[in-house]
Length: 89
Image (cartoon, rainbow, N blue to C red):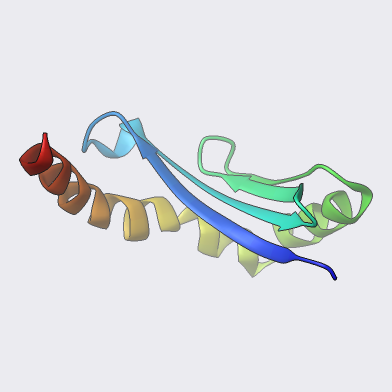
């Protein structure tokens, strides 16, 4: 069979927005085909299929939606995650 999945990740060193990186990676059969990174600000393709989609998504509404995810998703949850981690340590 074939396996397709998406991994969304927030990496942070502090709760400051500048210290947070949001990534969204698309995989097909364990091979990363395309990734959005907030530090790059656009999609980057790693396969022929991923490169074609990155070009299309970077010129459409998809890239605009992803650029806001660091603040909407990561920044909102980083305070919750930091507090939870500190109470466990």
